[in-house]
Image 1: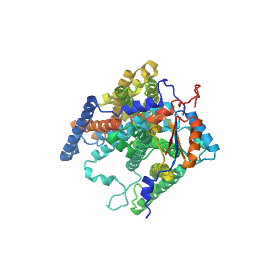
Image 2 (image 1 turned 180 degrees about the vertical axis):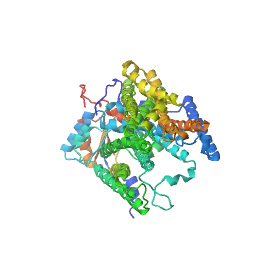
Image 3 (image 1 turned 45 degrees about the vertical axis):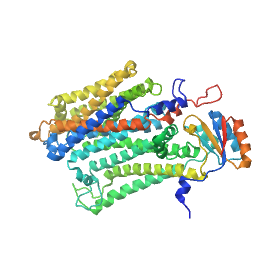
Image 4 (image 1 turned 60 degrees about the vertical axis):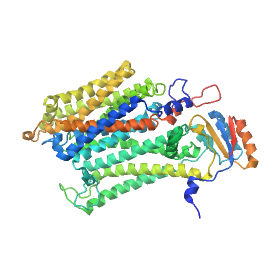
Length: 179
Length: 449
């Protein structure tokens, strides 16, 4: 029987090589070498987001923006629907004004756009960053990556591991681990 | 993001450890402060029990002043909340590097200030168990969900603001919680392990995170400007002279940011001293905050002048009477406190000597908030008390002990959350402070990013 939660929260370990780098430029060097050797499925760890790393990896733009857009449009529509429907559901004419008058409802539509847009952005980040990033299985990690070290994990079988180790070391890794 | 001027001692490791140290074992001073906050909250709770038992008459409400200190406090706390999102979202979009060291404090302040503000409408309605009457939903109870009322707009605005600023704070915290998780031991390691949601700083995570954060900031920016505009419409939509002005929205937003920056300074000065963050939160940061204070304070002063000028220039007798009553009526002391604290005091900040003197800034920041509290008091209470449409109904209103008790409680409530926050989560962003440092490179020549 498939266990989807187990796959997400306890994915099986992936064999590979982990390089730990002290310097940003060495990390970039390693990324270039790996890409030149035809690798694309490696993971780069960094304590902060750096544009150099993004550029070196040449990744597509995150799909989170679609979540924001769809959430925002949905929120605006819900705001319009909520106010207009509820006004006509209990029609009271006050001060001779129309029962459903759009200008004051724009405020609610605006707030709902922001609310839904923000919440769906969060969902987009969680969905993509927390869950989708785990598709590769459990990979090696080092607690120094949130402090002051950069890291690269390359999934590799035991035959390839030696080659990867020397590639990372050549690029300037201060430590290389197999797992 | 531009790299800021920093001392060379600052390395990634130094930043992580210095900020993580703020989460260490609390000292006696911390418990004293926390005890004081909880004590104030206790006063508030006891006052609330009295209000429940004997009714809102205890709070000095009398015709025509039915919006008084509770609504004043509501607007005050919502205003405080504004600088947080300004610093975290608007300055983020402007790519100002200096915000990184101060934005977390400002953002936490925002969330707790909105939490505090939200209590006041509930206290003000008197029968808290009917709070759900405020929530508009399709007619089930013979109540009319009137979306043309600014009070309902306000509910949506404050609700959205609270939700968005909370998720924005939590989002920013995730990489930092991961950083302290990797240093922590024991139960804290478990707590941070769960709350960091498995953050590792992998490129796939940063890719989605940075994009999402950008969009959150882009959404929070119009939100912060809208929220206090909507709060101002609670007044501006009414016909009361002194309230009914198109100037209100920008005037309130500027005032909100002014008071919020004031409180950020008030909070940062002791945090910096107690947690030894002098190298991370530098005098430059305070100077920038002071400049922000000067800018928004000047807009507020300008609004005061405009308001008074328009009252005179319009030739409208009611409007003129209202502003005369403000300045020279029985509440002259409140008006002049407001004018001096908000109109004159920020002018001291033109001097660089004052802007770079932390003690002076601390004192000024407290007066900024006294001034801003009185501004709301003047706008709300004084406009109602001296309403010139029904001069026979005018009455002088005076706050009672119940008003002060609830207000003390609100400060206790706010500081309790704030103190708990700074001891349990990084009060300065770890990853974003590193972003403005030059990254470690093997080549001796420092390349500017």
